[in-house]
Length: 355
Image 1: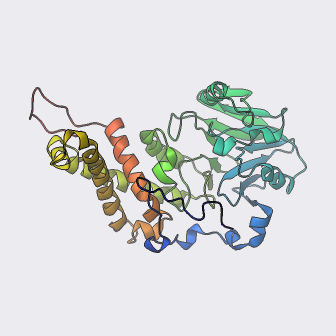
Image 2: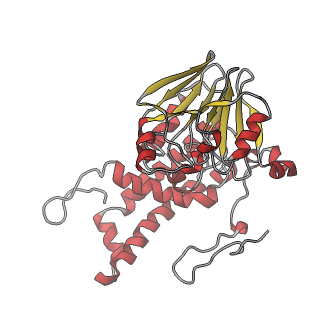
Image 3: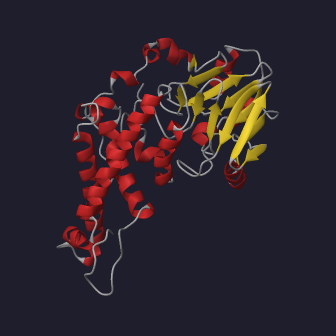
């Protein structure tokens, strides 16, 4: 069904061009679970699967590609996140396997695309989150995201009727306050907005705020002995191999970022991008400089033969669509978060460094 703006809103002059699917590589088949072909999934609005060891941890997703999870305790349900795109369908999924009420809700982090239906569980539910999440939701109130009732700073254990979840905060990554939720008996890890299994994840490292922390989070995820990962997006839950594959992708991006910065982000190279432009048009040269580095990183990453003999477009969904955005983000974050290898001496000239 066509919307008001059809399939694209084209700016008259300065906006983004329309993407053409014929210019991009289709998603690999492993990114496309069978339930996506079931018309009933779209009619019902949700899909549920049991994860890990035991029979009490469930993963829920919907047509918009957002995910939540819940665990049965025999004395109430512990829900993890409440995406607004699932909304009451999260309740429907829970009610499809149990009559137990939801007694606890864990917020992975404060972003409304993952917890914006928190109020659906009612006013009596106990809400657990990181201290930073409570601070942000108090500062920026939203009636659909009730302020957490219980918070922690580094480590916390939630035990309900002998069923255990271990909560951990290892520092800012996608955003400050984004926590790990580990079900040790079930061997299921929930860590949102870092790995979108089978894909390169959404543009700009899924709009992550701390890219150094984002990189570290891949290693922190792999420090858990998990059988299933709930990543928050986009069409399936993840495996250890999924994390290892996408970690390789991100480290390729960083390696080619370092190359681009060495080649193009130094005083001499910058003068080339600005050459011939008046002072009033220097920002045009700046855009060409930044985009040239992003283009270099994108081209090198997507044409590289990776560890299994394939290219990234053959291994991960969205590689040809989103890598240019990731290239920009990793490059800019490297300029802000990592060393410049030196600095300008007095006057002009002096030792090499990156801008």
